[in-house]
Amino acid sequence: MKGNNCCEKADNNHPNHSLQLNRVRRIAGQIGGIQRMIEDGRYCPDIINQISAAQTALRSLQAVILQEHLKQCVVDAFETGSQKERQTKITELTDLIKKI
Image 1 (tube, rainbow, N blue to C red):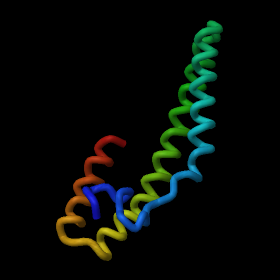
Image 2 (image 1 turned 135 degrees about the vertical axis):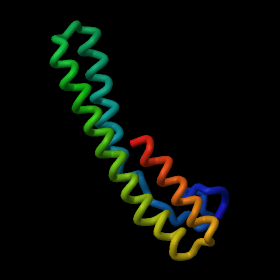
Image 3 (image 1 turned 45 degrees about the vertical axis):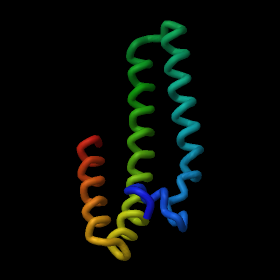
Image 4 (image 1 turned 90 degrees about the horizontal axis):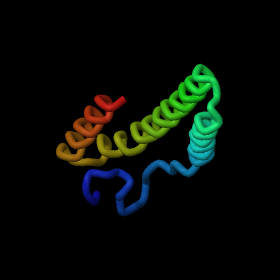
């Protein structure tokens, strides 16, 4: 394994997040819509509702990517990795949870 990133493995056996690109594009569209609403002077509660919808979409995307990381990268580290690699994944997950 190169570094601590499961996505840098030589065999490239990491989650394929390309399926999430449509979600990212929708979220980008939502953010663009929020910008237009602000530029157009739209009603504050309407803007706030759109911000909330974008936040929910981001949290959902975050959960899907975290789930794939757990199912592939973390499981792989615990099944085939060294004690050091397992500890690295535990530290990595602890740091991620603090950010969520």
